Length: 245
Image 1 (cartoon, rainbow, N blue to C red):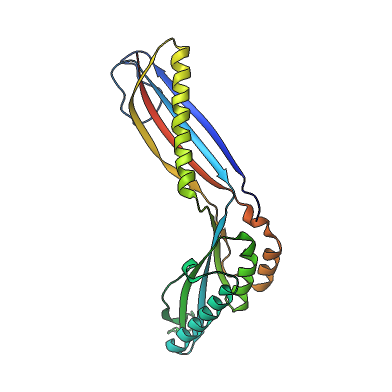
Image 2: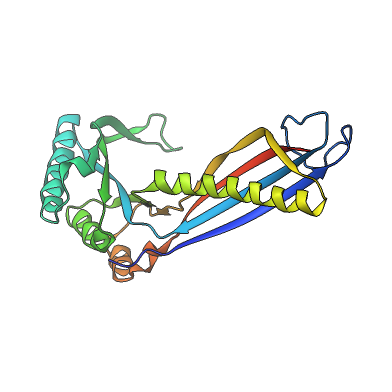
């Protein structure tokens, strides 16, 4: 398993208002006091390598009747679960939806009525992996079961809550740090916090979309593990209003 890389980048913006009625150039919808105040903004961004992945696949079958299509899909799913168990993937790490069946028609401009091709059964499966080195093996196991629709691979972090909190605290710390620097430079004493506007956190986890994946493409992808290097970004931002003494 590769080492996890982590980097933190912080940026800050600030506005110093020394006159009670002076409109701040800091364009935020935040309450400000009718007296000298200081508005600062702290932004933080944490980049980490993923330590887990979620594989989303769709199992389908087209048969002459709906029952046969359902049975075919259930057989493929059961065989897949058995193969994944051999890799140490447990049932608690697999989410499987119910089977949906529907008639499948072929439409043609030359014919008045659509042609019934049969009945299609579909079942969506999500597999969570906590060892990224197993990703290529799991992809191969999926394809071995005749499942061609590997929809996407999404990456994540098991300690995402901890990283969100770290980004949030870093943003607040930078806003406070800048407020102290600006008030000191202006020869004013920094007072209490008057208001805080918290921006919704942003998480960037770019998934890898596949669509229908054939065995040749999958073979090429699984030989190249570089696509699991996508960094996950945890960003946070906070605006703080301080009173100046």
